[in-house]
Length: 556
Image (cartoon, rainbow, N blue to C red; front, side):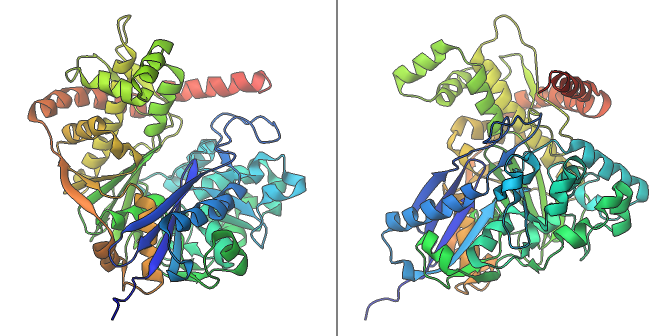
């Protein structure tokens, strides 16, 4: 008698520049086939497709690009796996957050309506859209003045990246778009809506990005004090039934089945966030395990069995990662983005020629050269705020800084200082959690930057912690597949699915004692700069203001 065939699931991870699909066997987590599809419009941060200019700190996307991932990556992953689509019992998706789509009542994005095709506020506001910082400042000031009970759950500050700040910006800068908008939808929920025809808000983004705590949102009178026209934001634009993580949202429609090549009626799981779904893929679903998903940005998540108030965190949500535990989130708005910025803008042609001759990428060449120096030999300290600070300062008016430059400073030395700065930023987050009574007992790394061994060793040395590493190269997509297996009823819960389908290598990198000591001295200097420019001195804020005024005066 032939052994029973293991059911299959599909996980789809929607990142900042592309979407990835993976076909996974539910019995053991084997990844049978995968495919990636690049977004046709990437990130709109300077101009719309029409050519209309965007202001500073804008970051938009085109929602049709997400559907394109379903049309291409999923069928290609199925083909690469060589499987019968009829064996797939569930599909689940994850998304960057907070990424917001303004839609009509039936889910049509407003940018697809002819009257709004040239209106920036009708497009998707990507997670790294930071132009709503003044609106976030007003929300924070009012919440502090009124003693809003939810504020402590977010470390005392909410971010310009989140639902309310972006919504308030939309209202005040494009009231006609706001009036036409029936739904203010997280992209994580919008893509599920496209798959199964059912709109549910997922518990993860509602809690972390939508200020949904203890069953309520900020009150109507709170919103009215921000702007009388904002009073009905929750009831009119945002509020909707909430689906629990790992639960089924619905079943694949005939249209979505045609896109994906999957059978109509396949179970579709409730949406989720890329970072949070990665925890079970890394078998990090217990208290004390901090997972850092390191890519263009880094998200730090962990579970705890008690509620603590951690200054500057992105949220504490009951069941926000796995059921029955408090899920904590923190993060850094720029990590891989910073490295790419430097490589793209600041490396001499001679380095590019050497890299090409040796068959290396510029990142690989700079890493090799940087690794040849002892710790501290470059004489530099950098602040990793090129995209603002998400944790623990929660301030996207902050900006990057490199201190110690001389006429002999080499590109690889600046590159190394930038790598180190992100590790120092992570150490601030870890120490803040520890001081608040949320112990970090294991540090687990996932994401694309895991492929840089030198960077991983820097993190181990700076944190003075052993680093465990996820086995999968598609952590979020695998995490989504795990949730699909739970939604389809193959595994009883996320813990069981993670045990069967996840994978991690414990202690892949261990601290080098002499490096730990050297980095302690550099970290002391980082903390001094961090507290000076982040808490005491507002020069970075003033420079942002001068920049905005100059651009406005120039007609940009």
